[in-house]
Structures are given as structure tokens and as C-alpha cells.
Length: 205
Image (tube, rainbow, N blue to C red; front, side, top):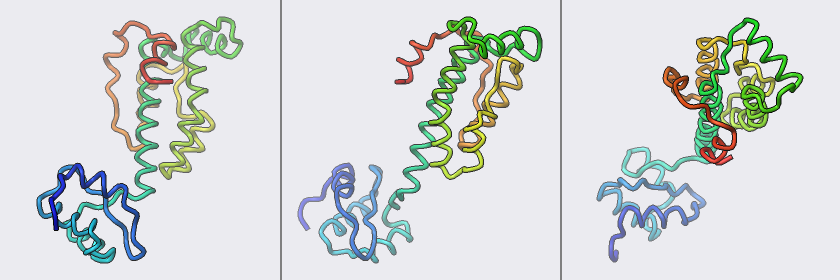
């Protein structure tokens, strides 16, 4: 059979190998057992057919291949978490939850009229609006079409008139829509405010 490859080398080779007409070649993880390594060698050499691969995978003897749909959902989830974290950091670090009072109302009026474009809440709204379509697409890619429509309408997001608890609940509701864990926001108000330029560098926007 020749020299056995390491699990990492096998993974690289299997990723390059095309699926057969009778089944799919699984992509193993780097933590394959010796038996899985031997079986993977047989797959690479063509001694195990696609139907054999399916049977061995169902028995747990070969690691399952991530489907295209699963990969798409995973990518959407990771992208959503990155964007949400940036929005959450900017919102809470700049103390934008004013509450349903005069401060909150004035902040909303300023954002609508753009009286001061450099105001942190105006900048956060601009950031949210620029990333909202991407989040909506990620929701669609993850299969949550109802949630995608809500994001497109901007409904789940907090505003300046939200109090801190309401804002936290809204962000965690968005996280739940993507299957992400809730976040503890209790420490964010103690941070130094972060400008959009710094956030862009930090999150790669």
C-alpha cells in the first residue's frame, strides 16, 4: 500500500479528490485514528468505492464530509457573529442606550436629521445600516427566511431610545436568530469609546 501519510497530509489530498459517481469522498479531520488513516488510504487508492465510503461513514469508521449546505450555514454564522460583535461593541462602549426619555428622543432626532454627523449614535446607525444587508443575507444563507425579513426591515436592532436591558435583549435576540450564544454585555460600558475607524481595523471592514 506504500507509505502511510499523516492525517494532515491525508486531509489535504482528500480535499483535492473529486467525489466518485457512486458516492462522496469524506474530508477527514486532523484527529483521525490509525484505522481511519488506513481506510482513507484505501479511498485515495480507489480500493474503496463510493458506496463503501457511505457505509463506513455511517458506521463512524470514516469522518463525515461537511455538505455544501452545512458549509454555507457555518460561514453565514461566523460572518454574522463578527458583524454583530462590532455593532454591539460600538453601541455599548459609546453608551448609546439613552432610554425612552428626552435624551433618547433627541439622539434619534439628531440621527434622522444628521445635525451632527460625528455624533457616536449617528455613526453607529451608519455602521448598522451598512451592515444590515449583509446580516440579512447571512440569515437567508442560514435558512432563517423569516428572520431575514426582520433584519431587512431593521426591526430587531436597538435605538437610542432603548434602555440598556432592552438593548441587550435585542442584540441577544438577533444572536439567537443565528444560533449564536448570548453575550454578557455588563463590562462593555466600562471601556473607552471606540471610533469607527478603529472598529474597521479591528474587524476588517
